[in-house]
Amino acid sequence: MHKVGISLVTLQATYGDKRAIEIASEIGADTIDLNLDPQDYRNVNSVYSKGDDYVFDYYEKLGEYARSLGLEVSQTHGQVTGFKNIKDEDDALVENIRLDLLATGALKCPVCVVHNATSIHLGPTPDPQLMYKLSYDMFSRTIPYAKRYGVKIATETFGDAVRFNACDFFGNIAEFKKVYSDIKSLDDFKDHFTICVDTGHSNKAMRYNNPTPADVIRELGSEVTVLHLNDNDTLTDQHKIPMTGVIDWNDVFNALDEIGYSGVYNMELALDFFGKDFQIQTAEFAVKLLKYYILKRYGN
Image (tube, rainbow, N blue to C red):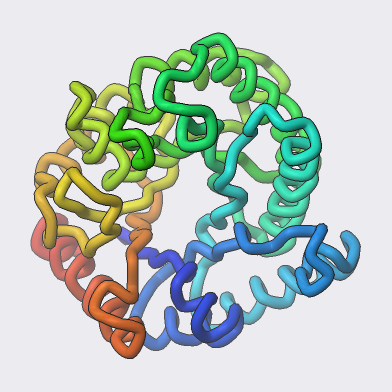
């Protein structure tokens, strides 16, 4: 069975965690991508500020509730800032990623998506050696926690650094592959590190002589185990419903078939694209549309 998933980031922000899960069940999603990024142990109102036992209990119960509604928690989305080469902030990020991974394990979820270091914080032409170091340091400090909690970290494909009208350093697929391979080659890390392809990000990076989203999938091959499916006009990170932008979705699915992809077809969408009052309807239409596409393509 081809499973269709939906990211709950917008619904969680509007309705809270539990109601967002209920909505996903009501609209016919098979799986969910639970957003963890807003949590920060330094914020007294955050779940993460209350200690490991509380974090584990909170997310364990959420996972149980999701499964009681027939939903699989197929992935989570952890921290998005990446290392900035600012010691205090980078150290805090490591702790928040640790808690993301603890929460992911408690949810009985296999993988947490974590953003790499980014040119957004470091300028349009950052020192390549600094970028490699930041990426290596961030993941080498956090993958051991993934191993401890029995989950994987997925690094996500990037697009452009929007502040500078330039490709993000790791939006360059060659740089992305290089640092990924260097980290993945380490015996202690290889079983707990994987790739999330964000089709919208890769579509934007295409403006800077990078491959199409489909060809990114082909280049990364079987390392791709998690998806953020979304569409755009190549210019902005619109996170539109697949088949409402300019991406060639038949080629994307051809590429996924070619690499033997057997995971969830998870969508990460801007559900308030048509306004806050239409978030649920937008999510429901997206799930129906992708399921219809899959039915026509595969017959199930």
